[in-house]
Image (cartoon, rainbow, N blue to C red; front, side, top):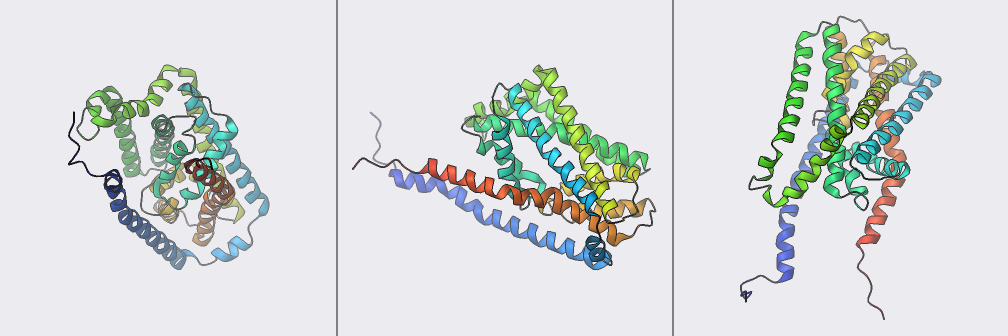
Length: 340
C-alpha cells in the first residue's frame, strides 16, 4: 500500500500546478505592453515623417473602391474558413461551415492584439468539443504552413522580378528552411516525442502532426487547400491595389503584386500588433528602393486603410461571436448544482 503521509493536500497540489501559469502572466503582459509601445511608436513615426496629405487622402477616398476592397476581404474570410474546413475533413473531422466561421470570427478580435496572427490557434480551443485540442491545433498549423509557403514563394518571385535580389534570396532561403524543417519534423517526430520535456505528451504531438499526414494522404484536399491559399493571397493583393486606387496613390498593379508580399512577410514578424506599422514601413521602403516617386501620404493612407479594413473591421464584427464563445465556455465550466 502506497504511503501518502508526505503527499501535499489536494488544494496545495492545485495551487502548485497553477504556479507556472501565474509565473508566465507578467511576461505575457510585458510582451503585450512592448508590442503596444512598438506599434504606437512605429505608427507615430510614419505619420510624422510621411503623413502629409494622408488625412486629406482618406477623406477624399473613392467609396466604390473601398466597398470593393471590403467585399474581397469578406470573400477572403469565407474562403479561409473553407480552407480550414477542408483540412479538418482530411483528418475525418466533420465541422459545419457555420461553426467553423463562428470560430474564425470569434478569434479575430484577438488578432489585433497579438503579433504574427498567433491568435488563429485559438480556433482549436473554440471547436474542442468537436475536434480534440491537439488535432485542432495541428489543423491550424498545417493550414498556416501551406499559406506561409505560398507567401514566401510569392515574395521571392516578386522581389526577383523587381531586381531586389537580397530580399529575393532571403525569402527563398526562408522558404527552403521552412520546407526542410517541416519534412524533418514529420520524418523524425518519433525522436521528438522521446525528448524528456515532450515525452509525457507524445500522444498529443502525434495528434498535432495528424493534419500533415492526412493532407499528404489526400492529394485532392491538399490541392484544394493550395488553390484556396493562392486565391486568398491574390485577393489580398487586389484589396491593397483597390485601396491604393481609392486614395489616388500612384502605385501600379505590377508593383503592388511584386512588393506587397514582402511587406506582408515583414508584418508577420512579432514586433507590432497585427503587423501594423512594420508592414506599411516596409512597403514604402521597397517602393523607394525601386526608385518610385510616390505621394507617400497617399500610400500610407492606403496601407493603414488595409489594417483598418482587413483586420480591424473583422475584429469588430467578431466581437459578438467572441462574447458568445466566452459565454458558452463559462457556462460549461460551471459546476453542477447539487439537488436541494
